[in-house]
Length: 267
Image (cartoon, rainbow, N blue to C red; front, side, top):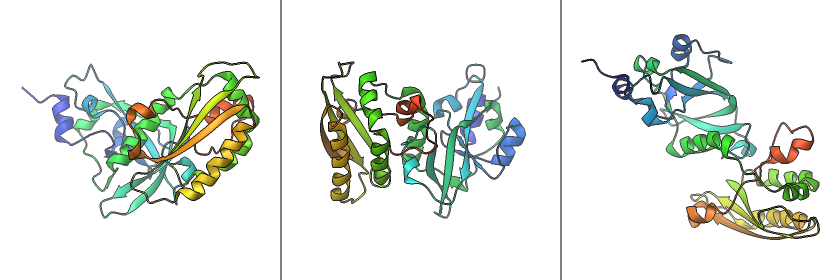
């Protein structure tokens, strides 16, 4: 009995976030790529890649990544739902900056992976892989806030965004918890906690971050909100605690006008 497609894919060492050989995969799968010099990252979950029945999992997906000169902090760590910047690592340890747009996703027959092997000249770190997959999943899981909260944020949106740009390279994300998490009358008060997260491995001074966050707080207080804030490293907060917080999607707040081409760190 011949080996299953899952066994062939496994033997070829495919896994989620493997880098595909761009020209070979594009030729076999007839992919419509922006450029053959772009990278292709396989994003299908590893268990689905090696599933034994092709009829149950007939397709795999990869996302096209365009090389850029350097990353922009406004687009790192999934801060922007429309664009992600990250590094692909070469076998010699050099880092290649790339830009990813969600519409550059490609679906192809999974059987093709039984005929090809990953491009082992490049790889994603485990952490970068998690960031990419969370960013893709976040396109379907973004937080929805009460209209009244969004209305108040909209009034000071441009000022808040200017502060957010200053934080882009300092934090991995800013989250918000609001009480009550429902519609309230315009003359009532939202009680808000802002949470700024820092990389666990980074030795970052809190003082400049603290100063910018205080500017956020003052702007929000002027819109009928009682606001406090916290600045923590990612390893200093539990999963249970972080589930009480959500990111604000600037794109959603911008719906009443043309969305900007460049969004800051999520508030």
